[in-house]
Amino acid sequence: MTASILHTLGGVGLFLLGMIWLTEGLRGLSGDALRNALARFTRTPFSGAVTGAIATAAIQSSSATTVTAVGFVSAGLLTFPQALGVIFGANIGTTITGWLVAILGFKLHLGEIVLPFVFLGALLRLFGGTRSSLVGTALAGFSLLFMGIDAMQSSMAGFEGIVTPTSFPDDSLFGRLQLVLIGVAITLVTQSSSAGVATALAALGAGAINFPQAAAMVIGMDVGTTFTAALATLGGATAARRTGLSHVIYNVLTGIMAFFLLGPFSILVASMVERGDGQIALVAFHTSFNLLGVLLVLPFARPFARLVTVLVPERGPHLTNRLGQQMLSDPDAATDAVTATVDEIAREHFSFLAGRLLRPEANRADQAVLRTISDALDETRRFVDTLPPGTPNSQRAQRIVATLHILDHLQRLYYRCTQTKRLETLTTDHRLRRLAGILQSLTAEAATEVDAERAEQRLNRLRRILRVQRDTYREYLLLQASNGRLDKDEAILRLDALRWLHRVVYHLWRIQHHLARMRAASVTASPRREAALEILEDR
Image (cartoon, rainbow, N blue to C red; front, side):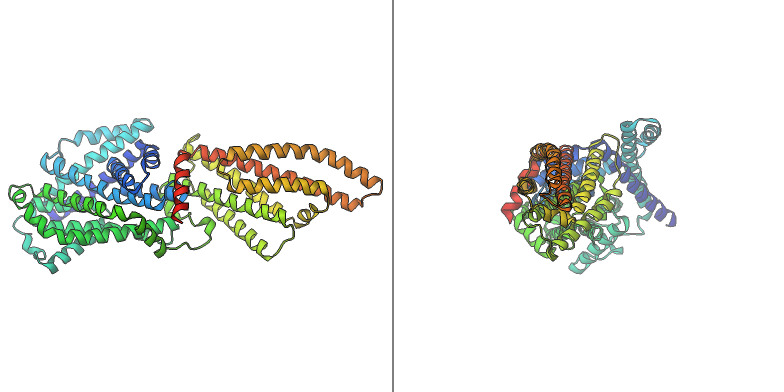
């Protein structure tokens, strides 16, 4: 009995390790394919659900799909309703693992056949290149899955006649509720619904539990995945917290629906169970109630999203509410959130500067806005410092480098905005007023401009004009001062004001230059524009 328990635990451990390695390998091999697919094919909640299901089935990780979707919401590449479709679809994608386990593991008994592939995978991981190493990791993980299943299956035979369906709560309403809670507990312990489903399949195959008991446990396992998702989003970014709550609400409602469908479904598959196909019937039940849940909720994705938005309002500084430590589990998604944050800080900074150029005198409201911008810059810089840069010349590395340049110039622009005396001097001379007016107009446009390259070109032209003006205006001021027509201190103030204009334009120009680079290194820009339009329509 003790040996059987230990072997069962070892089998579960092998299965979990196999899932981790398989996901790690497939996720690395997919590269940017997952991100590009989600950005390209997610146009509606329905297409998001299809894409989310396929992506999750391909990389065997619903969490990776979900985190990527959260990052896209933070970056403005997806609207929240579109992301909900991806999240719902990921639930369907996770059921593919059950089919692999039931058909390849329990029907074909691949446990011994795959042993050489573990050795081959280890060799590839140790001695192969980057992609070969990832292939080896995936291959070894795939093999360990079936070794774990084989270990669970053989160890479950030791419980035959000792552990029977009567050892578990009976097939009553209260008994099924208890079994659901057992399924929840198993998922919380293993941190994997797939491992729980594999265990239930092994127990069902050994006769330790019957089909209704196994189905009730699978419902609990499906609901149990929401607790880890909810805990992972506590204190996180707004998009992550909304995603976590959506996951909880959806899975709980789907679990309640599945609970009431359990009786009719058990009757429907009774003949399959009698023929010894109970494991196929179990994974079919798991897929069916997840698929039905998605089909029922998708028509209400937008109202559902609005409800979640009301339940989880924005909190904390609005400029940095996209950033959260949970995002770091997917560096690319975290980089998406950073790029959107930097973009918004830049626009806020531009709007503030445009307002100050119209009204140079500082007030308390201006000081509050400047503090908000300064705090946002500091927090964003700290977050960027925790991001792994990735391989040289990768899209992530390029975006991070561009982000650091932008933050540096924004910090310098912030310092320029604190120089109130030079701002006030701009109103004392006709030429300064005219140049400040041109800068104000371009800055206001840059705050709303989608095309950073166009804004960059305009600011660069103004920078060149100011460089010429700086020399000619200096000669004019010195001549006026030498003739006694202008106070020397006033001449110095006006010259400093022109230098201030030139430096401000330089920082704005460089910010727009690096914004263009940052966006070019991101996922295609067209989904961003479509998402932005949909967000405006929702408002």
